[in-house]
Image (cartoon, rainbow, N blue to C red):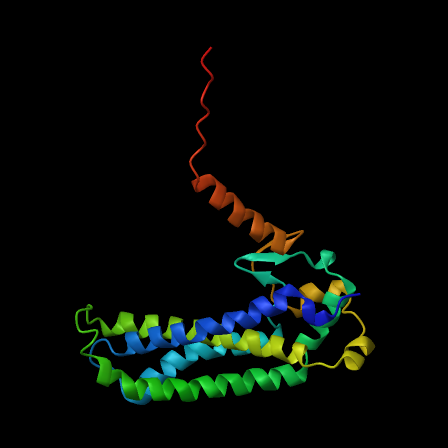
Length: 217
């Protein structure tokens, strides 16, 4: 039996951490647009509330079902015993503490971004200076930042679990998966083959058909 750490979906989610700087940069960009319409604390609260509370609430109540990616989710009944053990590690009080700490960390980063935003306003001066829209877009970018931090942090906790502890875990019952987790996406039988087939199909569809030369007698 292969190690639970070799589960591909775990590493895919960890790799998602690489997108965090991109979304934080977008947040900076949008916060630099337009003149503030509200007091500083109110603008920060609005961006933080939209960006933090929905995901934090989800992680506390029904954590993200990690066997899902790009709008495709593996059907719970197709999970292996090892994968159901991994879900047990995701839905723990320790992970909730990690989720809270990650949210606090990003709120601190948001404060720093807000301080820097006026200094880069001239760089993005060519954009429409619609503050209301830019605040909404900043909040959505911050929401994405939280998503791509919360999930890797949750998965990292699984990866650092020792083998003895993992072996002692009882697999999560199938009937509890739908109740205890937020499943996002269309449910399929095989998540990774589904993605790979779609990518391969897209590549082959873009290639021009080979011309067959008929032999002249």
